[in-house]
Image (cartoon, rainbow, N blue to C red; front, side, top):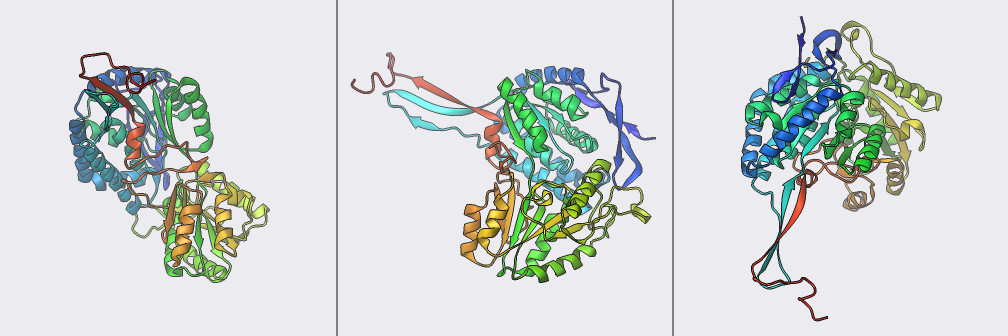
Length: 497
């Protein structure tokens, strides 16, 4: 019989006030029941926030280097449990084992980076314009942080948010995706084992419409970090703007990989296969558009089709599998809908295009890796995020045209250029409208110690990862110490009027 899991609220594992649960199943084999998880509601969120507010008052007073020591222990525990977490993550969300191992490793890297930041939460000291006066800045925590994360990186993305939030001294209310609650539970168990105070972290399972919205709307949650769709992010922005909350949004992408006629085509081919079909295309950084120079278009497309047709679908735990299932039936049907739209608009189906059935795939949400050629600028497949294993191929005659195609979408997360010309590389870095540009690498592959995020409708100006995320989770305070013993009126007494 499958296990029934609980929320972690107010220092204890507790059942939801609603008394309701939902089933979490393996997308590679829907018969495989992982467990039953809480379908929580507003009362659960309210209790979690009250507890987190208490946890914040205690945790904020722990010296930052000591907080860093806790983050280091978290990293050590993730190393210890890496293989077990990766295997359970593949069972829960489908991507192949090599990728889930990488997902956990990114959490490890983020933990160790956060631990180092515990020794360098630096402010500035600057000279005062007045005598015998000292001026400086310092970073202070903000309060309870609402953390809302997606399914595709069940360990990495929560750690991008939770670890900096905790290092800065905030308490956390964490809502993982309903598709990956088990990995979220494993993460919170490790936080507690490492020494995070029980009231500094709360875990509330449930749907976005009940739990996520309640976290965002709660008046005692002053900052929200969300990764998900642009449509939901826009709605959260309205709530946070009205309530004067700090909000970090990481949303959609329609990322292009440009291959010029002077590129290493062998390298570019490996790059597009990984970029387009890694995580079954379910990444905000996925290579969803391939922009080929006309001189190499036909021969590159032939090679691409041959390789895509050889990709093996299956359970991500099997060593023979190249591409796993989609996360759920709704995601599969959305991909099938875009295939139908592209067909109706006259795009040329090169390979794939169907749900994969039969044999070991019969009980999972599998879709063939799919390539469309002759895709027209401004068409649905060229403009809209599919979030599935579908690649749109466009033909261009120059780098300038390729850059225009890349920029002519509402998103701006990641971009890639394959070329052996240094001038082209620098032009792409300068002119591609994206938060990230890779040269001779695909659109996926962010590293934990560098900022991550995009422009336009991909984000709202904040960054995750690296040093910048710590500024989001903390506030600047300015301090003046006047040792003169007399009233000194800045600007008035400094200069003759």
